[in-house]
Length: 246
Image (cartoon, rainbow, N blue to C red):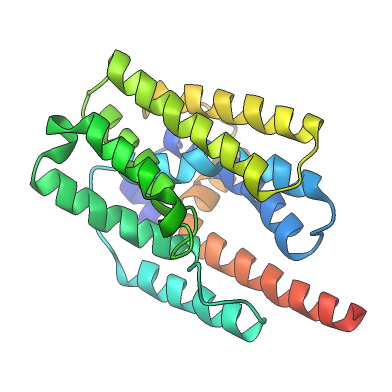
C-alpha cells in the first residue's frame, strides 16, 4: 500500500481535489441507494461530476489497468444481484471508454486539429450514449477538455467549450431529477465553481498537517478501491433495506 505514497511524493493539489470530491460524491451515492426520497443528498453530490472525468483527461496516460476492469466487473455483478439493470453500465465502464477515446484522439492528433468538432460530437452523442454507460459522452467531453488544458490548449475557444459542457450537464440534472428551485440553484452555482476551479487547475504542493495530509493521500491515491468498496456496500445495504421495508 505504501508504494503509491512514495510514487507520487508529498500531498499535492491533485490529491486534495480528488479526496474532497470523493467525500462529496459519497453523499450522492448515499442518496441514490439509501435515501432516494431526499434529493438534497443527490444535489450535494452532483457538483463533483466534472472532477472525475477532467482528471482522467488531465492525466498524461490513458492506461486501462486490470484493477479498473475488475472494479467495473464487480459493480456490474453487484448491480445485477441487487435488482439493477445492465444498462447503463457503471461509471468505471465510462472511464474505460474515456481512456479508449483519449488514445484514439491523441494518436491522430484530433484534439489539436478539431477541438470544437470533438466537443460538439460528445454533446450530440450524449443522449444515445447515456443509455449505454453512465454520463455517456458528456464524461468523455470533460476528459477531452482536461487533456486540452494539460497540453496548454487554453484560449477563448476552449473557455466556450468548457462553458457549454458545464451548462449542458446542469440542464441534464433538471431533466433527470425532480430538484426544486433551491437545489437547482445549488447545483448550478456549485458546478460552475467546480468547473472554474478545474479550468485553472495545476498540480502543486499542498501544505497540510501530517494526519490530514496522510488521510488525503490515502483516499486520493486509492480512489478506485474506495469507489468500488463504498458503492458496492451502499448498493447491497440499500437493496437489503428496501427489500426489508417492502
